[in-house]
Amino acid sequence: MDNKQKEKLISMKMGKQLLSLLAAGLTVASANACLVQIRVACPNDTTTSGIRVSLGSLGDAYTDSLGIATFTVSSFGNYTVCVDPASLPAGATLKPLCQKVNVQDLAPPVVNFVLGGDFCGTPPTPGPCWLTGGGQVYKGKGVGNFSFGGVVYPGCSPNAADGGNWNVVDHNTGLHFQGQAIIVDSCSGVPTSSPKVNVNIIDFHGTGIISGIGGNELNTMPVSFVARAVDNHDGGAGSDLLFVSVTDASNNVVLQIGNSAADAAVISTGNLQIHTSSCGK
Image (cartoon, rainbow, N blue to C red; front, side, top):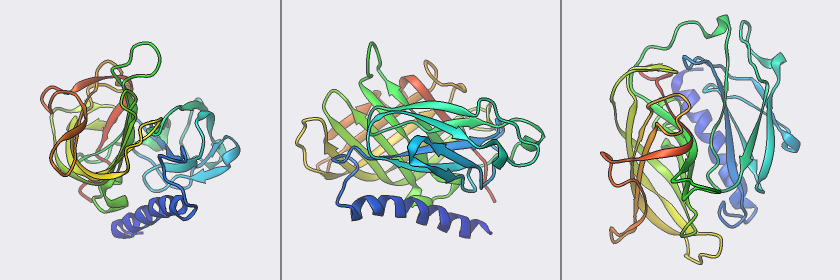
């Protein structure tokens, strides 16, 4: 399968999952339904398709060529995610085989399983980048002010899922932002080692929607956004940085994390991870 075929397959897969929600008369915000994404990959970002992943009573899903398996979760709560060791590629090891994920809002983090063993081999050639991530910002006791999660340019493709999806929930104001059409502007910065890449900053922008949740009666409306993610450390809590600014049609800021791209907020929990796998191919 060539890269264009892979991109088309990824886009169709994610699009069908979103369409299935719409066909049932649901929206992500009103139904408390969201996409939980699990990624199985080596520290150097090497991965494969066909790894079987289970999510509690929701059954099984298989990783795509980016190592991502996706589930639709219709209710919040604690779930156990497990990887079937029999489905791992030859030479790959994985421990632990199971992790718990707490889906407590509409922006769940990407759950990462890290492979080991001879399968991982040599890192991919560095190039342009893409992003996975999830966590919270400005967290004290309890839930943080913001939760975020999603994927930007899955597999380094601007076509897959229209550039990806990026969710932010503002718990103070009861707003849910969904970035639905994303464009990466640049990849820059310094090299990092997990996974081994030659950049640690990704700047991106796009369009999407914002709507009220949890008592906020704001009707869904179109918005634009700009964002920057900085991957300073693997396991990014207290180190990685995030800036997101969402504006309405009149250019009013309706949601913002951080003061600017140059003065982004330190994430409190979770991780922002920049990848270069599949780039330049």
